[in-house]
Image 1 (cartoon, rainbow over the protein chains, first blue to last red):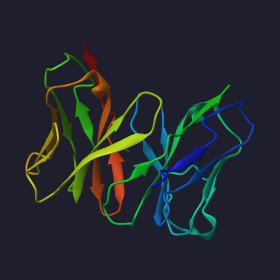
Image 2: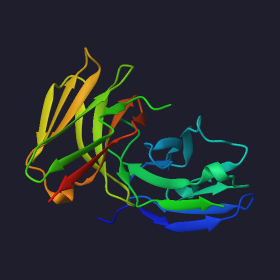
Image 3: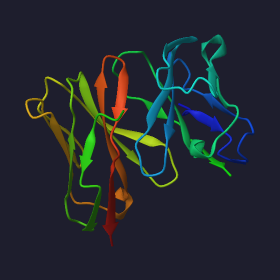
Length: 114
Length: 109
């Protein structure tokens, strides 16, 4: 079974530029998550999708972050414009259902904002 | 906000020794999960313990849960160099996982 795929793996941008990350979850997984992990901290949930609907985006900075999951499969997370404090690893995860199952994580995208 | 808090923040042990780390949390949970993260990589699920369970084993891993104290522990027995990683507890309430800041474990050869 193929795992969660993410791209790019690394990205360096200047502040005020925009950036987009892509995630392909495990086939058949209805729930998709985006996390932000700042160095030295645990992952923080940004947004959760159930199929192509948003379940929770309470911690997503909506003035600069946006995410979509078209057709309930792939997802993109965008930051526009980026700030220095957005430097982090962005992790995508998926799980079979919304309920309390284990999550499967992708390798993450390391973003550096200069 | 992060619900779980791991203790200690860092742990260094000799290969073959046991490693124990603890997790405390604040609110009621459905289950508690432990994940491992190797440097520069994504998280890997290790074990899930439900709120009505007290102890669970998986290979060299042993997890306990004390809901009255709102705490959990992860024991890794007979550690190996490959166990060097960060370990996170994550509490599940309804549909959301909340992660702690993690314990960094270094296993010395």
